[in-house]
Image 1 (cartoon, rainbow, N blue to C red):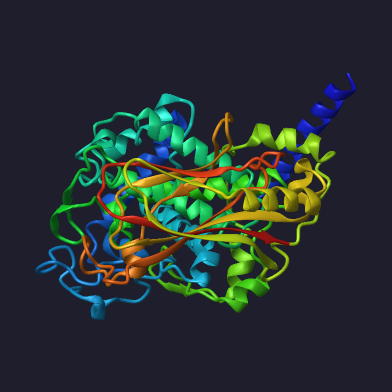
Image 2: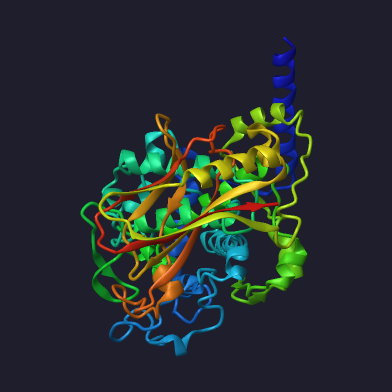
Length: 505
C-alpha cells in the first residue's frame, strides 16, 4: 500500500510539473499522423503553396527558408530554381547558418539553433495560412502505432505542396519503415534517455545529432535503402544522387525536414523532463562559444539574436507538445529519486569536465564484412571494472559521481551510406547497445562540398564517436568486447584507428 501511495503521489507530482511547465504555452504541437494534426498539415499546405511562388530572394520564400539551413557551394548548370544563386559567392543574408560543421561551437548550438529555425518557420506558416493556432506537427517515428512509422499522408501525395519525389520510396509509397529500421530507432531513443549530460562528445546533444537525427536524414534521403536508391536532387540539380534529406545542403528544402526537427525538439524536451538534474547550456557557455542566429519574421523583417537574447528566448518558447516520450519513465524515476529530489551533477555545470584516460588501444583495422569485433585486453577490462566500482562504490550509483566513456576514433575517405550499431559484448550475455555511428554531414563538414562521391581527399575524415558506458558494464572482471554491426550495402571503408576508455568527473 505504501508503494502504491508513493507511486500515485509521484504520478501527480509529474503531471503537476508538466502542467506547470506547459503553463502559458499558447500553442500545442501534435503528432503529425493523428486526426487532430490534419488541420495543421492543411495549414502547412496553404503556406507552402504560397512560399513556393515567392521569388527566391524574398526572406519568406521556400528557397530562402531552405537555404538558411544550407545550400550547395555550386549548382550544377544554370540554377533553375533561383537564377540569383550559382555559387557560394552569391549567398544572401541568413543563408547557410546551420550547425553542421563539426566544431565545438556547432555541437553546443545544434539543438538551440534548430529550435529557433523551425520556430520562425512556424510563425510564417501561421500568418500565411491564416490558422491562428497553428503549431508545427512532429513525426513520431519509432512510435508503437503502425501509423507513426509512415510519413504523414499529405507529404506522400504527389499534388501536395508538401510532396518531394527524392525520398525513400517505401515512405513516399505510403508504407511504414522496415521493422529493423524501426527497432534501431527505438534503441537509439532508449539510449538517449539515460544520457546524463548535454555537452561533450558523448553528451545528449551530440548523440541526438547522430541518431535519431542523422539516421533519419539519411534514411528519408534513401541512404539506407536496400539496394541504395538514387534520385534527381532538384537543389543540386543532379541525377543519380541522394534525396534532399540525405545532404546537409539540400535538407531544408524538403517539407518533411520541419516535421522531423519538431520531433527532434520534442525528444530534447522529453529528456529534460525525465530527470530534473538534466540541464541545458548556460548563458556563460553560449557567450563563450557564440553562434550566428539570423532569421526572418512573418512580416519579412530580419532579426539577429545576441547570445543573451537567445538564452532568454530559447528556453521560454510559446509552445508545448501534446505528450512527451519517456513519461512513464519519468514517473518511475520520480519514485527512484524520492519524489524528484535533485541530484547535483557537475558535468554540465563546469565548462569542461575533467577527463582522464583509463586505457587506450591502437587498432588500425577496417570494418570488413558485416561486423567488427575487438576484444578488450584482460588488463584493460579489469582496470575498467575496478575503476567503476571504486569511484562509484557500486554499479547502481555509477551515474552519481563519475562516468566512463568509450571512445572510437575512426577514419573514412568517402561518406558511408551505411550506419553501424555499437555494442558491449560479454561472454554468454546479451549484447549491450551503447549507440550508433551515422555519417550525415560528413562530406559537408570535412569535404569541399562539390563532389558527393569523393570529396574528402587523401587524408580522409577523422571522426570520433563516444558513448557513456557506466550503466552498460557488467559487475565483474570478465573481459569484454566492442562489437560493431554494419547496416547497409555501401562500399565506403571505415577504419577503427583507436579505442579508449576515459573517465569524466
